Length: 530
Image (cartoon, rainbow, N blue to C red; front, side, top):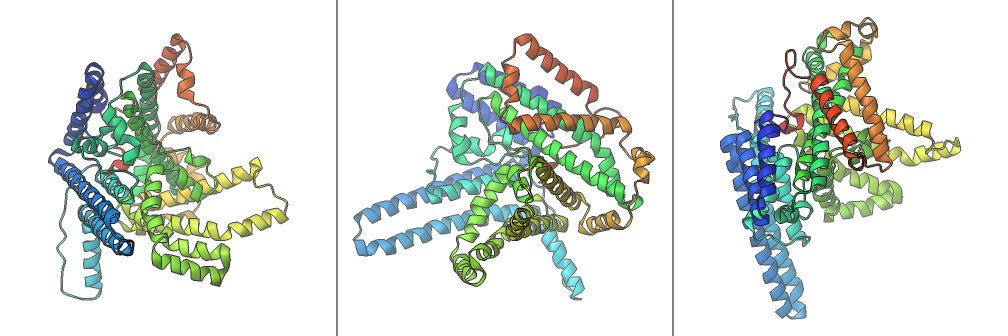
C-alpha cells in the first residue's frame, strides 16, 4: 500500500473499515478506527511504526507529567501567602517549560535527525573541504517514516496547548493514539489540533447515508483531480526538469506552470480523499485549501494553501518569536525610530523570516527548499512595506482596487509569482533552479509551442486540451464555492436518478480519461515525501 490512491486502500482497507465500522456497536467502532489506522501505517511503513508508537507514548506521558505539575501548582498557590505567589508561579512556569523543552528536543530533534542530518552533514563536509581541513563528518542514512512531519507537529501542538491551558492533558492513551494516528490524515495531513478531532474520533459517531454519499463524492473528486490532471502532466514535467538544458525559456515556463497545476491537483486531490474518507465515519477534518488561485496577494495565497500548516507556524512559531521579550523591546524601539506603521512591520519580519525558513526546511532538506521559503518571505515582506504606497498611488489615480479588472490583474500577478516559486521548489537543486530561471529570461522563443514540438516531450495536444477543459470546470466550481454554494449538498438534494447519473458520469470520466496503464508512470502523492 503506497498511497490513498492505491487499490489496496480504495478497494480493501477503506471499504473493509467502513463495513466493520457500520456493523459494530459504538464502543467497538473506535477500536476499528484505531486498528485500521495502525494497519495502514504498518502497510505503508512496516517496522517504522515504532516511531509513531514512541511519539504517542512519550507525548502521552509528558502531557500527564505537565498536567500533574499544573495541578500541584494550583494547590500550592491556593495555600500560599500573597507575597509567595509570584515566586511560586515563576517556579511552576520554569518546570513546565522544562517539559516543553524536553518534548521539543525529543520530537523535533528526532525529526531533524532523520530528515535533515544528511543535508547538514553533507554541507558540513563541503565547508570543511572549502577550508582545506582534513576532517570528514560521517553521513548516516536513515529510513524516514511516512507522515512523521505531520504527526510530529500534531504531537508538539498538543503538548503546547496543554501548557497554555487551552486543553487538558488526555489521560486516555488510546484516544490520544487515535488522534495522532487516524489513517485519513496520516500521509499528507491536514495537521489537526486536539480540540478539533480527538473527541469526535473517540465518540465514533454512527454512520449516516448523508455522510457516506458526501464523503464518497469528495473521494471521487479527489481521485479525478489527481489521476486525470496531476498524473497526466507528470511525464512532461519530469522530462523538462530533468533535462532543462535541452529546452528554451518558453518550454521551461510552461513546465513551471504545469508543475504548479500538478502540485495543486495532487495535493488538494489527496486532501479531498483524506477528508472524504474521514467524512464516511462522520468525522470532519479541517479544510486545507480554500481556492488559493483566487488570491490577490502572496500573503492571501498562503492563507488559502496548506492552511493547517500555515496556522501551525503562525500559532507556534510566529507568535512565539514575536511575543518574546527581546522582540517586544525591539518593537518598542522600532516604533520610536520608524513610526507606528513601519516599526512593527520591520520587527515582525524577524518572526516572519523564522516562519518561512521553517516552512522551506519542512518541505525538504535541500537549498532549493530554503530558497523557496526565503523567496516567499521576501515577497510578503515587500508587499507589507509597499502596501501604504500602493494605496496612496491608487487613490491619487482614482483607481478602484475592488474593480474586477484590478482584482484580475492582482490575481494574475500572484499566480505568476507562485509559479516562479514552484519552479525552484521542483528543480533538482538550487543551482538547476537558477539556471532554469536564467534560461527563461535569456533564451525565450515561442517556436516550440507554436510549431507543436513541445508535445513531443510527454504531453500531446489532446492532453493539453483535456487539462485546459478541466481547469475551466475547476474555475467555475471554485467560483461557486467562493460564493458559498455547497455543490455536494446541491447534488444530494437532487432526486436519486439524477444523483446516480452524476456519479456514473464522474466514474466514466475517470475511467476514460484517467492517466494510467501503458505509457504512464504511477505517481505517488507528492506531499507524502514531505
